[in-house]
Length: 450
Image 1 (cartoon, rainbow, N blue to C red):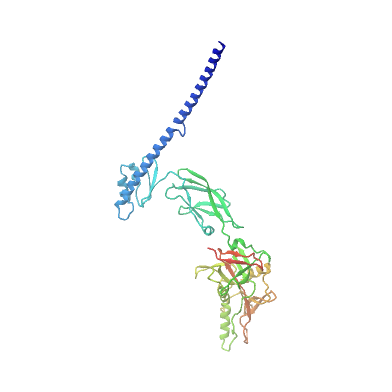
Image 2: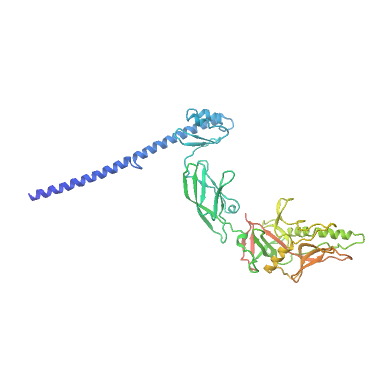
């Protein structure tokens, strides 16, 4: 009797377990049929996608038929309206005017962009946003372009995670661009993230953006603050090779002047107004006046003759002591140093150029950097008209002092002084460091960038 009662108890437990298992299976089955990501949901989604696909193909067929009506292979708005008649709502057909592109809405509520070249794209996704590829060298000169392509809806906004290194903005043509991202110091790769939001409000977040740094000479060479930081650079002037290139020192390296280097010694001797002594008929006086008035132009033109035009390392050249910053030369429409009559002087009633102060900036900078003295006389491209009317050209003497020399004589004859010549070269902003550490024994060697 006891045995039978024990058996009955085991059967009740098994029944309860069976019921629980059946309930669980029923719940799973019901959820699979009706819940999120359910079979019913997936079936409905598949039907919707199939419906949208059919609508897209139907509109594409209409566009192809419209294109076949023309002789130029383009879609005409009137032909497209005819082909879409009865396919989409009349209010949408009325939107198709002009040369396109046209944006219309299908019966499903989905929008389509149609171009007169025959492209049809659904405007409903932001998952294919493209950052146009751009070369490393170009990143220092033009922004990275962000395009939504033909398959993507209009970009409403674009934001950069770290605005301290780069920013995104829409230009006047409606193109989104990333500006900035140029870093200083050692060459490296800088990465940030970007978020794009479409017109519909859909977003793509955490898009990786690589901002590559271009190492140029200006980035690497330090701003000269003393003799130690005025680094050595070798430049192969016109007619020279890298083996016998001229030794130079950095004179400026800032946004106002750019990167300018100056030869460490005279590269030539120059006589301004040779044989300009006064003759019996006064012709010598007129020659002296002409030499004086054109001295700065002649000195700067001579500096330009030392540019090695084949290497694209130097953008311009001038004689030390001329205007140190760049001005606009309207004749060549090219940024040039102050040449010819750009000095701050005025003509006198006798037709002589007045006094200028061109030399001051270079003269003081060279003194500050301790790179002025080369133990020989050399010209400064700066004039002085004395109170007595003497025509004078400034120069640095062998004792490192500011001095002056007459470009004409008040009487008598004889040749005028012959002094040294130190050109200053403006380095092209794209030039790079090829080798060297900037010391006298291991000067920087430059190469052209792109």
